Image (cartoon, rainbow, N blue to C red; front, side, top):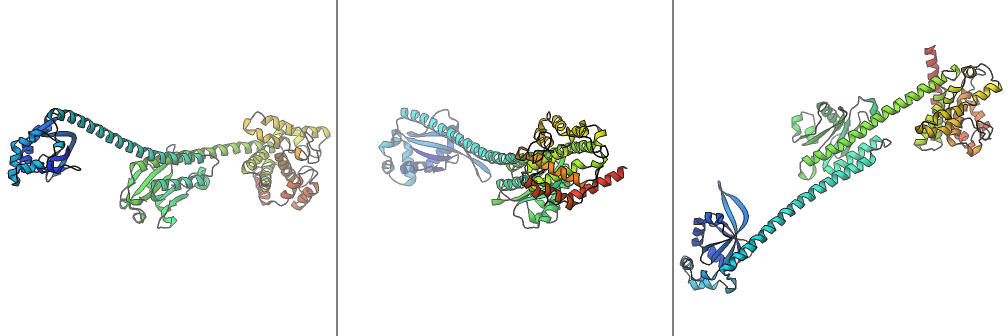
Length: 521
């Protein structure tokens, strides 16, 4: 058995290795004429086996083929040729021998007896071969589906991998600039573009240091200012656009130099709650490929995550601003009970933060120490104003009332879960290193570190401010007193660090508070 491709014009083409004697018969003009004459029957017959000549049987394999020949299509059939013994005695053999002017016995000599198939056996073999072909076609189809699925999985993996990397960095305490740079660099590599950029708006204060920033990745031939100017122009153009846009020819944008920077350009708007935050844009796919729908889908997914990150960051800034605004309003209300201590809590918070930073504490602890410094005197709400504002020195009884404010402050904060870690600073800021402080006479390392830091900052502000019973000491006098009292009132290590701080921000704050008092009066 041999396999041939046969056209409706009778043209025969062998497929793979075929028997030379069979091909000799099939390429004859007599066979070609008979194929043309019987093409319709061969293609439409319900029979499994079509006998063209006696003993020359064709099994039509169900593979559809149409090819353009000139201005029309030519039909093709893939067939298996079977030879029966009747072929040895049919008249067609004589016609072929006359065409080639050779003896018919020489033609027959090319056919091997082992090739002959009985007619009854031919139908069974044909059915089996057709089933095999159908199985092969189905296997090919499934292989193609598998390859297509593998490609989709590969692309999805890249997308998921990228989004996973980004989501791992989408924490509120993550540096936003680092997040955007990582996102831009990762996406530029996954997309395979020569360069990629993120341009943010410059008119929203909640973006803080990111306002108007440009983040880039990849290689480009122009100055960074050129990329930024293009980004600002594209942002104006895309201000109301909510969907990604691909420009196959940047010349239509009418943007100076953009055609030299990129011939093709992808632009993805970055939006949060309907408001534009910026755009992601990039171009020039490497390896001669084009920006396709898969690239756009990946960018949309990334920008969606980026928008959520930036939006959450802005909401966090809003929440932080409201939180600190509330704290400042509360502490100002407390300080206002005594005109001599106006701005005291804010100054204590400032110096507590500066001392905590200089002592090498982590950024989270530094920030929490600052907040505890703001709230360290919140317990004075429970102390009568007649005692707080009394001119001159206090009586022992009055001083006992003042000494209650750390415990009152701790009780106020104890039911606020988010402020539980601030309680040691509020409760212990009047404890002394030598154990003679209040309310619990703690000594040395028994005093929580936050309490020691705030206690030193509180004493510094008290000595540096005017009080009803004395004038403020100058800076050198205050620092000398701190050194004199280290190991007694103050943690000696913190005292040595404190006297070397920069005090300009403190005195700037005093001047600001004094100006506010003048305006208020």
